[in-house]
Amino acid sequence: MGSRGPAGATRSDPRARGAVVVLRPVLLALVYLWVLPNSLIGLLSFAIARLAGARASIVDGVLEVTGPGVRALLEQLPVRYPIAAITLGHVVLGCDPEGLARTRAHERVHVEQYQRWGPAFIPAYLLASLFAWLRGRDVYLDNRFEREAYALDGDAGAPRR
Ligand SMILES: [Zn+2]
Image 1: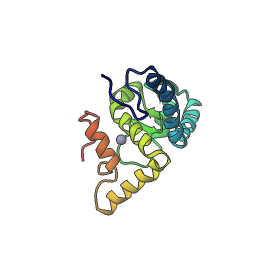
Image 2: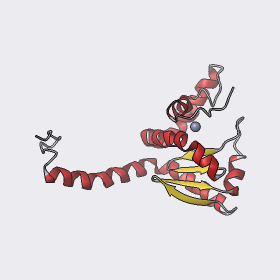
Image 3: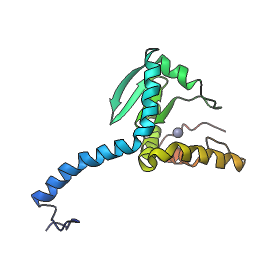
């Protein structure tokens, strides 16, 4: 006996399966659209890094960019820690392929955060850093989004204080 769906159809009902087949790509497109303002920043960064030889590939629906141009871009960021990778929407920029692989689980948590927060993610991230700073904490390690990513990525590679 199948369970009832929201429209009263059972799971074994071919109409319900058809609705899932149709809705899944539509929902996926809406998620990418919701994150697009952030992804455009990532794509612009890719375009700049591409001039210096960066390359891109799609891994699990995310555009991963690496190469010498990316390293030069990441070195311009005003942060205390060396950055192996950064996520901008559905674009992840990594200094090198090894860094991309090592940080993939962490950066995928950030992709999920972008999917939750959409265009509000970057302002929310900056406010979380400001909030941490106002409490005398570390603007990176005590940022709530980083804490979530380090807690969920299964990697013990968080920068040491
Ligand atoms: Zn992070």
